[in-house]
Image (tube, helix red, strand yellow):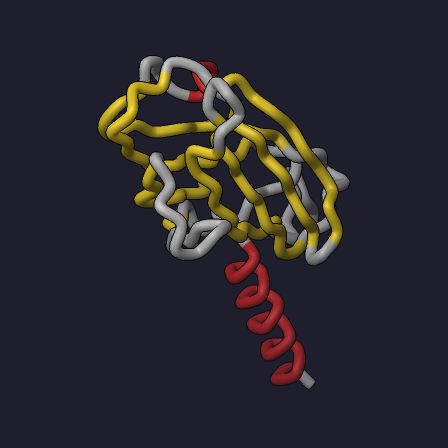
Length: 154
């Protein structure tokens, strides 16, 4: 019987290690409309930590570049849980990066998700709109919310 208990303990420990945050992960970039030549090119997306931990701050970093001189605009964020739209928010572009933005720049947004947020796979769609609401870029990317919550007792 001790062998079965050891196996269960090892399985539980391995499962816990798989669910703990692993730091950060860079995500491959795809655009909302494939083949469209957006004025703002996104070169990378990083989610820290990955997976996101409920009740703890998470940072979404987006590396981008442009030939334009962007002095104003909106960052529109939509979040879906599987196929269900669950959240939307709009930010002033210059609150998320230094303005004017030209050449290479980084957008960074920090969110703390409530501790009751369901774990699982989410899709975030980020649109950058210019001063006359023209779409400067649009990218969807996935992120995960882990099963482990802060101060969890095992």
